[in-house]
Length: 402
Ligand SMILES: *Cc1c(COP(=O)(O)O)cnc(C)c1O
Image 1 (tube, rainbow, N blue to C red):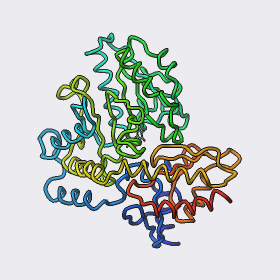
Image 2: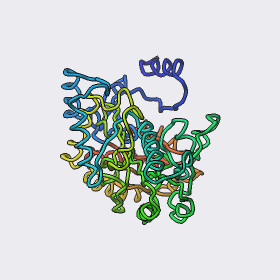
Image 3: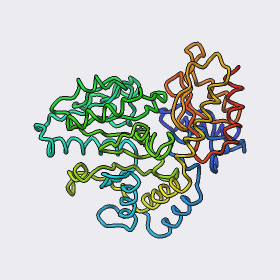
Image 4: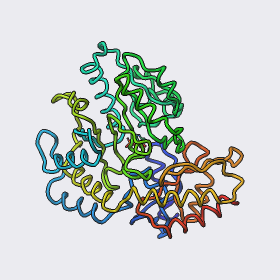
C-alpha cells in the first residue's frame, strides 16, 4: 500500500461516511497547486468551495496567522480583543454604504442561522409581526448549510431525509421566480433568503432581473433581503458580491468561506444598525466567533482581496475561461454557465454523470468535483494566471472530447 492508500483506508475506517472524496490525499499546497503523499502535483480547481479564493497559504495571510498566534489566539467575547473592532469596521467599509454592524461567527451555517435569528427578532420588534408567526422565504434547490433549521427549508432529499422533525416558519419559492415571491410574501414575512447564484445546485445563475425585482418587492413590502454570499461573495463571480451584477444592495450580507483567507474559519453577518441592533447581550453568541486569530486573518484576507484585485481578475479570467470552454467540441456538454470564476459545465444525462469526468481530470492533474450528478464545477483560486488556465483547458478538452 502507498501512504495515500493507507491514509484513505484509515479515514474510511474511522470517519463517518458523510462525504465521498476523490481518491487523492493532499499533503501540501501552495497557491493554486497541491501535492499528494507520493509527490504528484495537481491544480486545485475547486478551491475548497471558494474558501481558497486567495489561493493556498497566501504568504501575507499566513504571516498574519503566525504573528497573531504569537500574541493571543482566543479570548472569548467575555473580554475585548484588539482585532475584532478593526475587523468589523473594515468589513463594514468593504461591504459599503448602509452596512453598519457585524456579527462574527465561524462557519457559514452559523452565519445563516444568525441571519435567520436576526430576521425573526427584527420581524417581531421592528415590523410588528405577531409573536411566533414570523415567516422566512427561501428558494427551491437552495444550499445554506446543514443545521436542522437550515435543512428544514431545503428541497434536496439527501440534505433532509430522516432529519425531522423540522423547524417551521419557512416557505420556498422556485428560484428566479419574482412573481412567486410576490405571491408568497404575507404581512408576517420577515425576510427573503437567497443565493445570488446557486453554487451547490449546479452553478445556477438566475434569470436577468430577478435579483433586482426581488429587491424591489422586499423594499415595497418591508421584508429583509438577505443575500447568502458565502460562496459567491468576495470576488468569486467577478464582482465583490454577486448581487453587484444587478446593482442590488441587500439588507443583510451573509459571508463565510473566503473571509477566512483560506487558512481559518471565519464567517459573519453584516447589516444595518436597525437589523443587527436587535441583539442584546446574552441573546446570541459563539465561543470562538470574533476571536483575535480569525479576525486578524480576515483583516488581511480583505486587504489582499482589494490590493490584488481578485474580483477584477475573476471577471477577466472567467470570461476568457468560459469562452474557451464553450469552444471545446464535446458531445457530452449540455451547457457551460456561470459568472467570473464560478463556472458549471452541465453534461447530458447520457454522459453517465460528472463523477467519472472528475476522476479522469484527476488523472490529468486537475482536481474538481461534481455537483448534483451532472454538473462539473470549475472554481480555481482567483490568484490563478492565464497560462495556468490554458494548461487546464488543454486537459479539460482532452477529457471532455473523449
Ligand atoms: C458553503 C455554504 C454554506 C455553508 O457554509 P459552511 O461553512 O459549510 O457551514 C452556506 N451557504 C452557501 C451558499 C455555501 O456555499
